Image 1: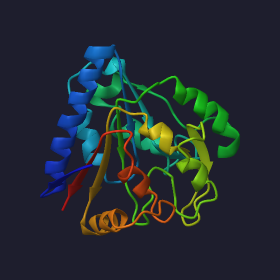
Image 2 (image 1 turned 30 degrees about the horizontal axis):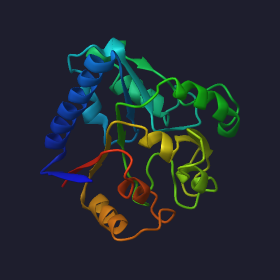
Image 3 (image 1 turned 90 degrees about the vertical axis):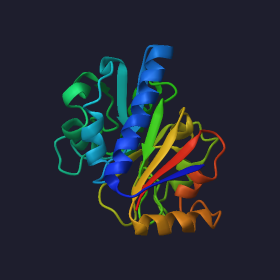
Image 4 (image 1 turned 45 degrees about the vertical axis):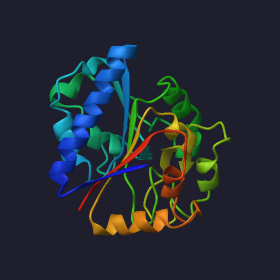
Length: 229
């Protein structure tokens, strides 16, 4: 695990964009295509805007989400809406996007379709994750009924439905093994509060208490943490 500290979010965003752009271009040059998994929330907005301006062959990039609320794509809480309006613009408007939300009535009914859609992406080039104050990442929430399934490295599952105990909306989340099928994992966090959660996660081993520990303790994919003070 590599922890990189920045004085402010602006410096972090600049460095993160440089790293992600390098990884995407490298994958395109080597394999002819690249893939990017992003997360929602307020933290990545400035990063999205900056990344969208980078000059590369975006037509060879496929973007998807680490997790999604089971709401329509025009809903205010939709991560897809957030990504389309803040990342898939400017130079990045030619990138392909694979949604986690489909036409199924609820997330559990939509699992098969989502897994089929995601599997065509193969190994991810880079996965960018956030972290909640409760230690969740993607929609792997502590206390959620399907958490154990989402963290099971031998489940054979790539996406599962989740109903958080303390957050609105059903969710669809990529599982731990699917997220780790990546050339690079980056955790993007900011603020003293998130640093405190990170330190607590590093100090223990119970992944069901703080699911971010599953990312910190794994030896499957290279992991970097970008943290702004």
